[in-house]
Image (cartoon, rainbow over all chains, first blue to last red; front, side):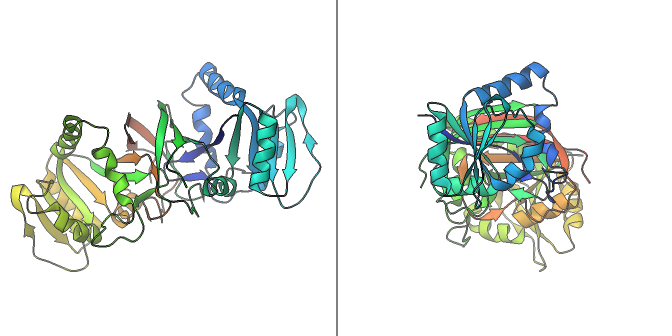
Length: 196
Length: 196
């Protein structure tokens, strides 16, 4: 069985999006800075290698409804996931099939059921919790995460959507699996331990 | 002239102290986890070397009133600073002289005046803004910091005092000077740029 991993870019001041998220600016004001590291200071080869490894090990994705709605258009007809995505939502919907193996499946019966379905789809590969903040917090608070990967963007946004907010967990030590400094970002991989 | 540096330990979820700060628990509940890295997984030599370098380059310290009040007793009669400390406060007070070169000087006329006095005392050495969060935020928002050193403790506290809160700055890219992974902590040193 694969792992359940929260994988997300966050600013040094703790934001995963800037303020005023809207269709035209799905990452909020200045929120695109959080992803600059994917494009700046890396050769195309390095960036591709990093992303290839990420996508290769992943068998399914979980995301919140808002993340899905904001991403649907930019991700396009052949989304980068090439795997089933499970969307946490209150409203049932028909599964949307895209090219290259990506599907958007709507789950209305809670985060645990969504994880069950994602695990089933992922087989031996990992399940990635992509966000938004609400989805991340629910999985963290429910003790369902095995690992947390934070791409700490070397930027202060000053305002926006906080990743680590409304937490109900007990103080927890994290075990660093990997720390890698790259231009514009520090990649931090942690294993959860002493957790819940 | 030395630099003005915010230097502070912060949890992955952005807290510089746990909840319920009080005299008996000056770092709040579980807040001592933020400083575990100073003692765990380091040889005594490594820890001493790290701290020695920190104290050596520093000519003066700035801190908030609450930080001073909570620290006064634990820092003892021969505090680790060996330099003048400037305490931001609303109430004037007599300078307190401790052993080994540490003095606590109370500044009632604002953060800029406190910095002026600290710079004067520091000469060519650096001025360290130690916190708490209020002091850090005021210096950050006023554009007075040259560098930010975050000792990112590999821990989730879940609740407490946030460092990066109530910011009024524009989104700002940071230039990484150094990233060092150590047991229990990632040391991040940033130079401020495109700031204010």
